[in-house]
Length: 457
Image 1 (cartoon, one colour):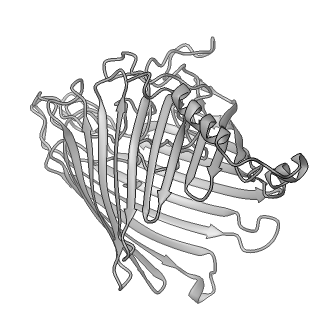
Image 2 (cartoon, one colour):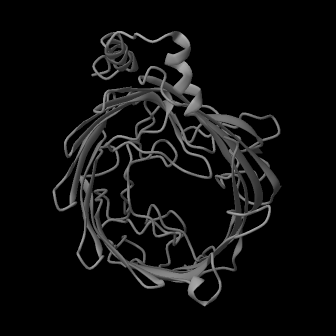
Image 3 (cartoon, helix red, strand yellow):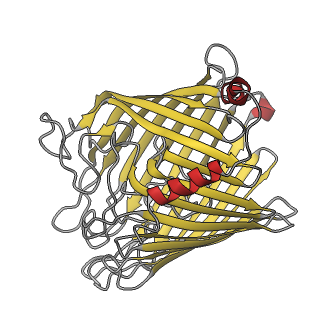
């Protein structure tokens, strides 16, 4: 399997396609001119300020006073070059980014700067000043490369990427995001035929954007997992309903994942999408885990609405240890990521075994009353149904208030200021991460961001 799905195999396929391309008749200068004339150079300067306080539990399972969990102010900047295609075949995408903490007084894994450990699996400090992975000083200002990929297109139907890249074809393999994207080392092939899009993604290594260097995939038990690969397909019906299906696995690990998503919009403008996510991993689950989801949304005048629900099965085989489903090819967060559409931004993932969760959101655009660029709203989530032996049954819920303003004029035109506040409640008596493997105590979470985009070309 390793040989079948190696990067070298994908590179050979791409090279063969290049060699098979029609002979070029133009001069070198005219062939390469679209590479530069159709290129863009752009970036962002972002400021992220966050304060998150989390409660603990005493010996009787009662909440203790909230203490600092995250407290930082971070500056992030990136610069991206995206070329056109020389000879209408080959191009180049580059993107580098830098992060810096203005202050840092909480946990170092806050994701808006580099965490000063070797990878998310081993968490070994890589700086002499960082004596422990969770020390508040264990962050690492610096620069990293997010994208350095050759891109290819062959006619109107075939595309490819090779290098440090972000997947863009149908697959189960996705990326983590901060203000920067995660990075895979490998390549992809895409084929479009009429209403059908096919994709192959192969990745030898990965890094979440809060790590400077890439690392190998590991299994749940900490062994080398080899290469990650995925095959995907998306078919769009004549009524614009799309069907997205994909399968992914590891060459040297027994974990695989798959999804099925159907997406459409009614004549009345209601978006709807039933979805199924599946993860199989004998090292984490007693049986194949899955999550069912239903996503809906619509807009009416100045208002936007969302209503979503999920149900999860993720049996650990141990009644005292309730597992959760994370849709990725590694169980460790930051070790990889999947193409998962659900994002409630209400702290918890609401994804424990036998948990039923619901989510609702309402937002309003105030441009009709003279506040162009300003929008605000609230949302909430509620989850229940899971049970861990020795602890109260799971009941968790939260609400969020948010506001956004896009600056309309002046030097910061098109910059966006965002405010987001979440209050999360966990009504069980289980300590964080005990009994329920992805559960923590009550939190207050405040985020304030300023995002300034710019374009040079």
